[in-house]
Image (cartoon, rainbow, N blue to C red; front, side, top):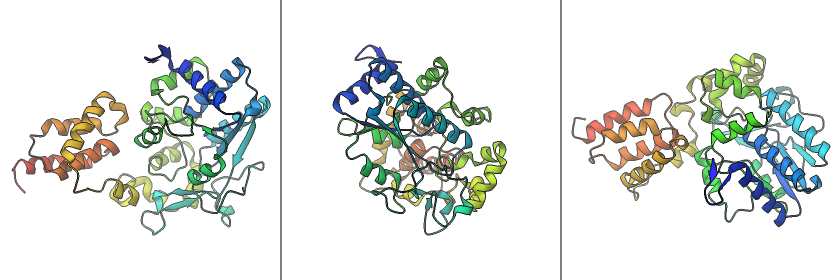
Length: 358
C-alpha cells in the first residue's frame, strides 16, 4: 500500500512519523501490548532509531499487564522487554488494579473487572511477574488505564500502534490525530500491510493468532486482549479448546464467563453503554444517516462488521422504511450481527414498512 500524497509505502511513511515525533520531543513513551500491531510498530521504531542513530534512552516503553491474557502474549511481552532493555530503553511493566468493562457482569449492578485485585490473589488468572510495577503515585484503586495513561503521559507523549482499519472505536480515537498529543506511526496500515510486514521481517507473534485463524476466525477479526470485554469474550470457546487449564482459571476468576461463552452475542450480555450508544435519537433522520454510512462502507467494507448483511437489506428497501428500521440497520452495519438474529428480524420490519402486514 502506498501513501499517494508522498508516493512512499506505509513503512517509509511510518518511519517519517517516528522521526517527526523525535524531532518534536526529547523523550517518548512507547505503548506496547504484545499484539501484532504493537509488534510491527515497535520493530519499525527500533530499525528507525538504529538507522538514524537515535539513543534508546530517549524512549520509555509501557506495558499494561491485564492479568487475564494468553500465555504466549505474556511470553512475547517478556521477549520484547528483554530486547528493549538490552538496547538501553526503560521498560515499565505495570500490574495495577485497573478497572475494565466486564460483560460477564451484565446481570449484576457492577459491569467491571479489576485486574490484579488486592485480596483475590488466590483467584488471579496467573501469577504476577516478580519485576512488575505494583503501584504508582498517580494511580488510584479502580482507575481505568485510559485515565491513568493520561496522568503518566502528561509530560511524555505516547507512541501507539492503533490503526484506522482495526475498529470503529479506534477510528474515532485516531480521528483527532491533528490535535492529539499521541503519535500513531502505523495508523494508515491495512490488515494486509500488517501481515505482509510480519512475513517479510520474520517477526514472532503470539501463536494464539495462528490457532484462532485455523479455527475459522477471519484475518481482519483476529484480536487478543483480556478476556472479559465484549470484543474478546467470543474467544473463550477457543481458549477452552487450546488452553484447558487457562480456561479453568478464567472460570474460577469470573464464574459467569461460562454462561457468557454461550450467549455473548445476545442482548443478555450487551453492555449498557452499548445500549445507550445505539439508542434511537428522535431528532435524527436515520434514513439519511444510513444512506451516508452505506456509501462509506462500500468504500471500506472491512471496517464495517455488518456490511454484507446491511447491503442485502438496503437492496430490499423501497423508501417507505421508518426511521426506526433504518436505525436498526445502521446499528447492525456498525456492530455486526454474527448470528443473523437482527438480520432476520429486519427482513420482517422492512416487509411491514411496505404495508405487508403487522
